[in-house]
Image 1 (tube, rainbow, N blue to C red):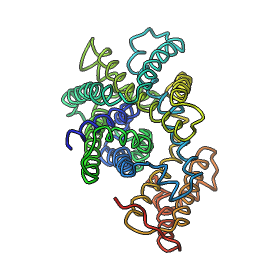
Image 2 (image 1 turned 90 degrees about the vertical axis):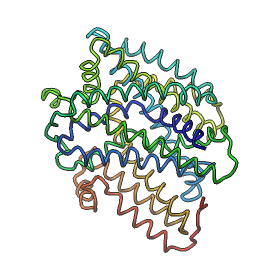
Image 3 (image 1 turned 60 degrees about the vertical axis):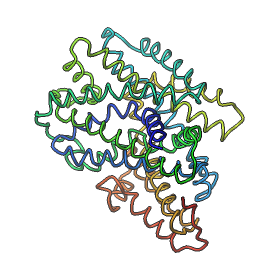
Length: 439
């Protein structure tokens, strides 16, 4: 059982840990300054805790979240939500971001200063061709990612973090800047959204289920125990590397001229720390580490997204969808890293609260009978608040901003929390209550 959990945990860890997981923690460390611990606590809570819980709950149902959402909310909402989710963690944001980070952090610094779209285009073309060939054989993904690539890049990251903390750990952090100075926990919590891990958990739970089926189990009890062990493996791996990368960023000396510009702090810290620690070989080391990290995630996302669309919309085959999403990822990647991050955050601020609320309903319904209309109202409340929050911020609608700011926990970036609890309370008292499948 432990061996099965370890193999599956390595597979999932390798698929999860990608571009955002590398660049966002050191950036948080640098910007949070003396508010490091509440900031990293918020980040780990959303980036690890919610993601792993979402993964475990999804693995308990062999049919995945499609079945859970269809039963508790409605089939059409399940399709709409999952299409948006898979496109977000797939060709629109996560897939192209992995390729762009691999290029900007690992490859671009080794080229001349006059590099541009041509070099990025050539790199991403080769990158996505390789990912596509891996995705064509999803049954081999455990061997290619779990047993080979994951241990390699994990060791590379641990080496960088360990040596970096040994070198800079005694240095004092800078003053907290931006939103971290006012609301370190809430800002760190929202920053955890950028990893996309809770959304990816919805998708990767199906990959984990298929992997576990290949390993075989003597009983349902052994299967469930293995799932919890998988969750522990993934959670420990994430938490250690997140805290280590963030602490390195917190203590690494970043010049004020860099802190006061739009330069991605995570990219800067990774690049400069690697060069300071490893000297002339630094950029090759960084290029290998980042390429390994991002590539595993790219392959896993192409597989998961293509499998979902092939099962949900069987008009085209898995290979057709894999090719389509590879081409879409290639096109979006050439827009550049900053553009991808900029456009992704509003979508995440809508999808994340809905995802968290769905997981909450699934957990509670396993033990307590809930009304279907109450569960539908819960998701409706959360969706309305999330949409209002994003629209108010993006379009500077003062009335929406004032309404959101008056909601409880808005100062912690959780304005949707109380509306979700109100919906849950209604689900407890409204008629036609049914209890979910309690595993």
